[in-house]
Length: 588
Image 1 (spheres, rainbow, N blue to C red):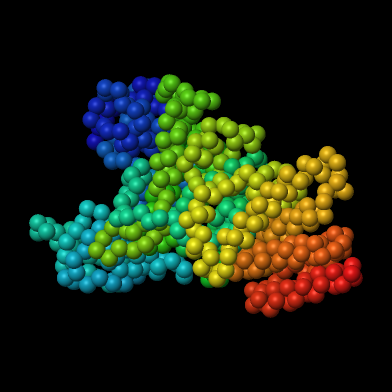
Image 2: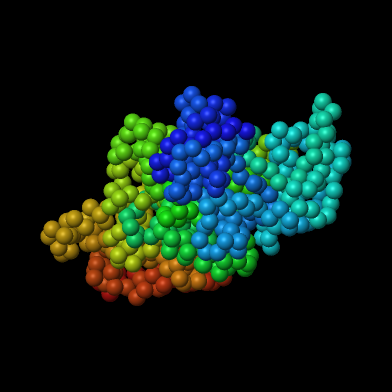
């Protein structure tokens, strides 16, 4: 171990001398309190250390000790349902030891080292195994069966494998390598957070992560293994949207990182998630969730680590073959931590004081997403989808963090404070948002719903765009200046906005919409427009067509329970056809 002494303290930055044998990103123990830190710069025998705890009271001359190991996370049964801080310290365990306030220098194992887990082998003696091959399983919660994998760096033949109850540090198997060395394997693995876990192959984004949120699935879908950003001003619903995605997205595991957000927001998450029922299984949502809480009043440097800790845990479950959704709330606070540390290091500032390497750091984070084939002799397909909230000051997305994020991610869900104030949820602006995955996933959607999904989507997007252009004319000269077909188009677009895009997250039917129901909703609105347009050409009055009774039924269709969706669709279509025909007869 390298040992040195403190030379300078500047907030979370500590400069230590006598650290010639230390390496970049080594974890250090700083001062008598043994505060956790990480080396981020080395000049000769001087090392700059970002300390993940409060540094008040430290002074020159106090000891610093390098562990000669990088910041790593513990990966084993016990992760699911846990609440960690930014450097994977278990907050519940610390609270039991020290009370409600975090005590500096507290050393607690990340996972419970004494709890016994029932290990059921799936491999047998004599099997040839490689890194990432599954040795057996542990039923971690009612929902998650964790697969115990061969650690990276170990390859060979299984010479013994046990079944029964073990702690995560006890040996469950012995593997003999090609050179005759016998390696003992436990359930616990460690992995450095700044290094992405390897995989065999990354697959194309041809399959969506279905969320049940209509504005996302229909207009701006995210691929399984894709990346998305949710920028928006204060109060526009970033956190609520991420909660909704955590609850409903088609993911086996959710990793939620509260990075530098307000404490009361994180408290809401901690209070709500255990009470929320997983809609697919009926158990608590926490039984498939890992929470990382690093609020704005916690040490700023730990924000920087929290993002990497979260994505490393997510990659671990991805390698098991799970679909994982990672929510980072928010990367702006993470970038602010980078800016503060960069300023303390006296680096040359870039735009708005952010470091010049902001874009590359963001890219390194988002590039760890993907739908992949795992390593090993028996590979599995897993996916890691990353959804990052961005909190631009004053809602101005021209600032550096938003712009750097938009250069990397392929889905942009732009939240609009005007929509939020009008109680339109989700407040995703359909004119500014986009998804670059749509073309690749078009064939999947058409096949999944058994119809022209992409054609309906294209028509609805065109209608919304035309409505925005017509709205300007209406504001100038009034609705009466519009032709009858244009007025009908405005009415159809209003139906898309209010009946399709607006969703009630508190209504147990409307909070989640299956793809087949979304498709039928699109077809109903477009059928009204097509049939009414045809009736106009045959002499029907625009006033009569706008005020058809069936429009109320089309609007209420979203509250139809799933078992009656097809029947109700056919009934509404029949009523629509009859009422439109009546308008033509009356006009004749």
